Amino acid sequence: MLLELSSVSRRFGGLLAVADLSMTVEPGTIHGLIGPNGAGKSTVFNLITGVIPLTAGEILFKRARISGLRPSEICRRGVARTFQATALFREYTVLQNVLIGAHLLAAPGLAPALFRSRSYRERERQARGRGRALLESLGLGAVASQVAGQLPHRDQKALALAMALATGAELVILDEPLAGLTAQERAETTGVLRRLREQGTTVLLVEHDMKAVMGVCDTVTVLDHGVRIAGGTPREIQTNPAVIEAYLGVEEPGA
Ligand SMILES: Nc1ncnc2c1ncn2[C@@H]1O[C@H](COP(=O)(O)OP(=O)(O)OP(=O)(O)O)[C@@H](O)[C@H]1O
Ligand SMILES: [Mg+2]
Image (cartoon, rainbow, N blue to C red):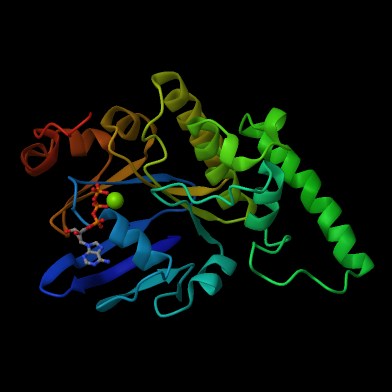
């Protein structure tokens, strides 16, 4: 398995946001993490990516423990994420954002490289080529030199995905990549997820769009109030009485 959560808990004061959660993600799959609002999904992502520490348990990536490591180290080992609220460098161009994702361009606020060696310039040239190819594959080729903050919502979401992919991650963690998109844009984005899987990238997906989750995921884990109440194939999940009661029977606001 690529990712393993073992008895993971996270407490916020009196609230147990994630309670004794164990789950595994197999390489080359799209794994859905679903549950009602406040179930703990984003918290699980924050735990995996090291943004917040665990209260208990451990997380392994490629059989090595990553819980307790800094986010930058977890990213370096091959785990990348996009955020629920799109976090882009709005004054930078689309291509520059991707190069920042690839750690080849300093993010705003960091000191620029003073000494640019020939090998650095060569790496940068290659990264630009890869960045452009990545943007093409996500339908962003035509806007590569536009300023990110001026892109329409759909393109900003695609760019957030491009930045995560530019890190060369083996595991990409996506928090609601379809939120706010039209039906057409949703279909395009799920197409991108399928292409990622074909290329061998593993995807861990939080998404409220049940039709998309059930259509694109190989396996699904269901959380409710921080507790894993079910796991299995989309078909198994859809017919699981506990899931129907906790989640699928409840209308999501705005769904
Ligand atoms: N930093 C924090 N401090 C205190 N409580 C938090 C914090 N982050 C999350 N929580 C609480 O933990 C619970 C789980 O929140 P989380 O954001 O993980 O849910 P979610 O499943 O992602 O929900 P949504 O579908 O609405 O995005 C909620 O009750 C939330 O209020
Ligand atoms: Mg969330």
